[in-house]
Image 1 (cartoon, rainbow, N blue to C red):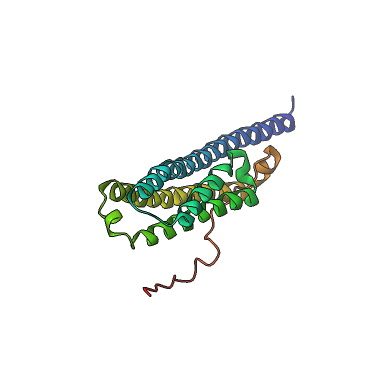
Image 2 (cartoon, rainbow, N blue to C red):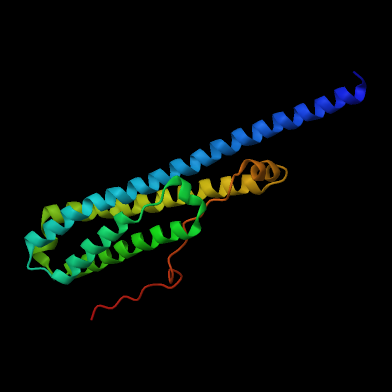
Length: 195
């Protein structure tokens, strides 16, 4: 064999090794994104599991506005019916549908907690206070996990767009993942009215 043949084999070997390295790196990053998504779902599930206990505590403690409870129950049902798998993370529309369903549930819960302020005997109920603290903690965990997910997506999306990794990513079928985005109108501070 001549030197050109050996040189060609050497260049091909380097490209193959680089391609393997890029693939393994992208697999690790994609798994991090999927694991981060699982944690987001885990926290939403925790919140969903707490809601029936909260609703039952509210029902038992006061002659409560049925409309508010119904809204919470319906929003929980809708939020749990919208599922997004790790494979769906490439579809921003599916992630947005999931996010909208969760936002509706957050809004219904907020209305429930505001309405509870009218019922001092309910606010004094230890079960209700414990559930309220758990829900607040869960909302904080959701925010944390969503941030971690967005960080993992950023790392992954950056890796598949950088040259020359983008060539191998395109050849190997790696697509960008969707971010969680702020809800519509989140840029405006809510108005507080005690009337």
